[in-house]
Length: 77
Image (cartoon, rainbow, N blue to C red; front, side, top):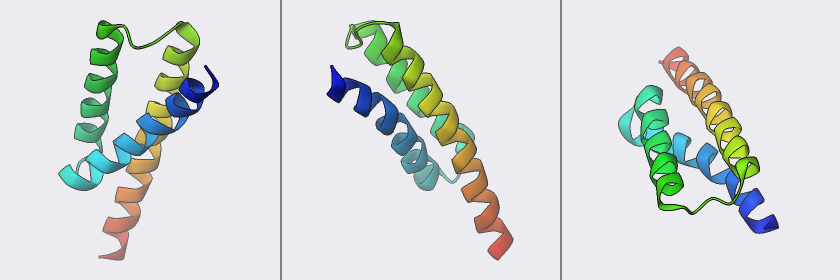
């Protein structure tokens, strides 16, 4: 259970950053990550609302960090 909590805290954040770097758009990165999370919820891979809530928080933090990362990258150019 602890491993699932740690992964729920880290993985959506990293996935948003990965998809943002690949697609050059933080909205696309967030949407792809949200689609993956939704698919995992539909398949039943989550156990309880606490993991769902932690996933959503991690997704939101990843979105804001990706937006800041993109703004900093554009500022350098």
